[in-house]
Image (cartoon, rainbow, N blue to C red; front, side):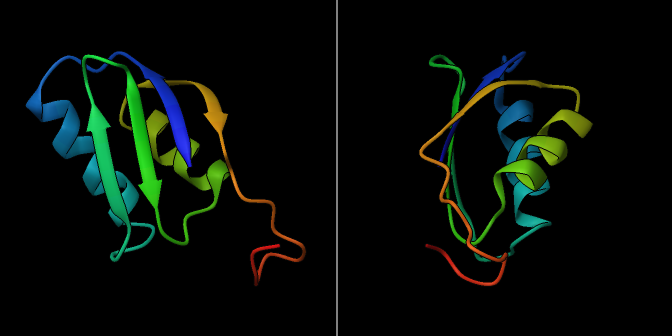
Length: 77
């Protein structure tokens, strides 16, 4: 999934967001593009939980794109 995130400016932001997402799924792959304002997450992270984790670090998630839709929360439809 791809999230558009405001407020990222430096390497500290990359580390904070990566750590926040990997606290939800240690095996998640996180690509943070500070200049482009995006975060790409690959793994079993729920979009709502990812948004909450990023916003708890002080950033603003503007939109979520390509979020998988879970049928019951235990699988990906």
